Length: 405
Image (cartoon, rainbow, N blue to C red; front, top):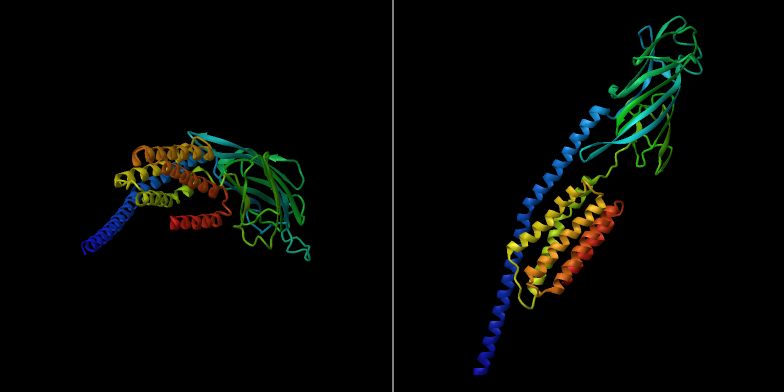
């Protein structure tokens, strides 16, 4: 009977201990959850810092573009007779643009700027249609004005050159040329050329009945923008060339454009913001790893909430290091250095402080986990087209590992 009572008492003690352990683990779980919520505050500060750097860069780039020339839009030439626009349409409109680009630097920031050689060629059509071949306006002896226009006139270099009716080329210090028309023709051919400075983007407004646009340059990473994509293009390390063939039917309004952007769509700040989106997930996975270590440790190691905060703070410092280093170094190299610094710090802290030199295996697990996480994230950044698929599979694998653990 005494043995039986002792057995019952022992069972009750074990049950009470298990219940106490479960309660303790639940308390620790909610403590960790509270730590994660607290760490959202410095995360917000770090995000604001990154955003401030982006705004500062935009201000610097705006200063450069204001000094050099803003993005340029090449508007079509116009023809007026006796000061009145008689709706002279452009028949065949050919635009040939050669871009010589370079990087303008201010401090640590760079922006591509360019000097463009622009040649416009076509004919002003002076009939209602091909069926009615009679000129609308009698041009003989009339004074005509031929004008050009761009988005930012400050970018003009030198004098525009006009050639009207295949006559001698005329230089002018204005954006228009006044000329007397000697013959009454159904078409008035023109050739206009000028040099123009601009920054980052260049567009052409196709307003002719038939528009052929060719843009080429020495920028190796162009992005074709606007309402029309080129029908053919070539890009290599030496530069690019692209051609558009746009009819009046397609270009139904005068607001449509075709052109090229010289800015890389993904810069170090964009990449940093993409990385930052995974910051909370990284914190959760790392904290779960330490929590599992706590509840499975044979030595009943307990990690203090302040230690969780230090671990989380170290992981958040990674993003500040990344944004600052990537302003100086290539993003891939900056990412590798910052990852190595943070992984080394966390592993050393885990081994010497958290486990008190008794958790070499767990420290190795943390090293492997963090290395895999940061490598996986970098792969996601590179595989932008398959990021959702790879990320979903990765998260599924992580959930499986957590459930198994």
